[in-house]
Length: 277
Image 1: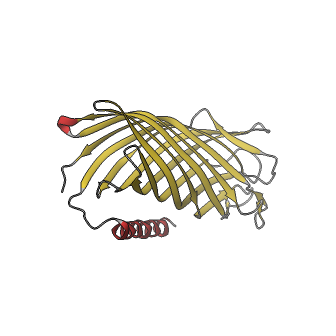
Image 2: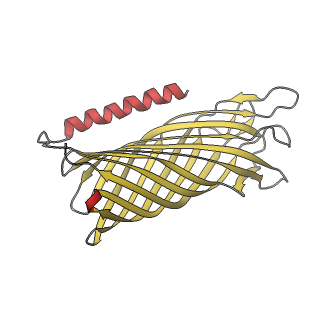
Image 3: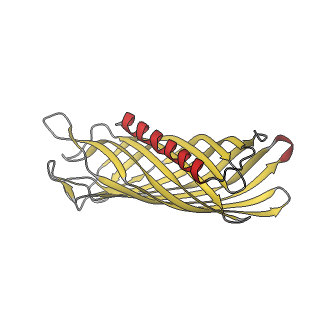
């Protein structure tokens, strides 16, 4: 599955570059390149159903704090068009609590988040962007200490289109205010899950789903001209809702109707800008 998603994402990325080569004006005298590192300290809140009883829902507590880290790359073709890539990875331990019955379990949670985006400048302040978003997460809860039907391991991946608007407002000299808002829909999803079945090995299922979400961010950026570096500090919010194609998996009898997640916290990034090439 991971090889399939990697190959598919690579093809989409190459397709974006091809489209950029077609729609970007031919008068490209030089490229502005940037490379940097970004960090996101985020709190995760989740609520979901995943059991043989649709009235039983779960949420995460006593955990869910992430340090997401990763690279940020950018190519500015001219005054109008630019291409960016951002990748973030984080891992943590969460406590899964059932909202009705006295059940809880500690789970290991890992998450990958990547964005390819092509942006176009509308004016000196606003840019519109579109691209591809990829998300993968895995949850491993070990063997639960409760009844049958509880999911003990899940791996979820998806990618799809996104569209958004960003803005930059000068405050004074080298200090700027950055803002962005975008939405995305992960249409090509794959998920595998194992649930506890007493008396046998964990059984597997592969529910079908789509992810819908929004991203928003606000930050202050300061450009250090002598070293061609920009530092920005701010906050980011992300909401994702997974909608499954049916109320339950008919083969396993498991209800699997929704999974809603919120990530919010502080961001910090440093970007170095190369001279025109």
